[in-house]
Length: 112
Length: 116
Picture 1 (cartoon, rainbow over the protein chains, first blue to last red):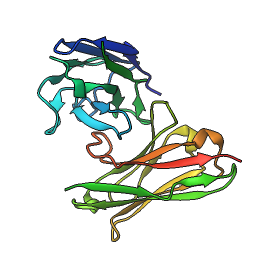
Picture 2 (picture 1 turned 180 degrees about the vertical axis):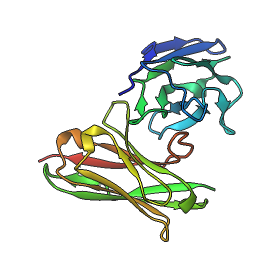
Picture 3 (picture 1 turned 60 degrees about the vertical axis):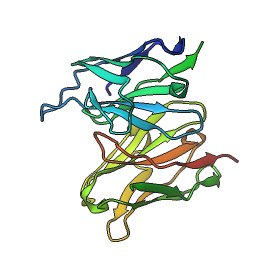
């Protein structure tokens, strides 16, 4: 199975400052159709996961533009340009290129 | 508006069976891959199973193969997860999600607790 490794585990951030989360996969996530199926989800406390970014860098229509995704192959990053209070929660990356699909362990974003 | 509403959760004893349902609305259900994802208490997310739009192909994580069966009824806009031989390790919130590779919408989840 593809192992997804996220870092850091916990990310204390000052409001208005940037934040960055890393996600590394144990195999390339490029699929045979040319797409890279790497998705980022946000899970606020007590809520179900919400998709933010799909196919590495495509932002969901409901996601604020302060969220951006980048990367290729096995190395991916989620960036928040200026953290707001509503961004508190756990962020997960997920690969959906190889069966079984697998998630990273999550990164908890909190306000300092 | 896309809506996914899970039901069927509850408390069951080890070894018992349970069927979860997910009622879909707001989109053409028969055109989409559908998945189940679970989250054990205070743990991360685990993909469980996915089914093709026509129900002809299913995929499972190894830990549930032979015990869980994903299915769908396109006439009823419903997704199901039949679970058997449940163990404490299956205790989790179970979410249904639309699509497979890009999982765009998720339900609110239904909690399964396996305990004697």
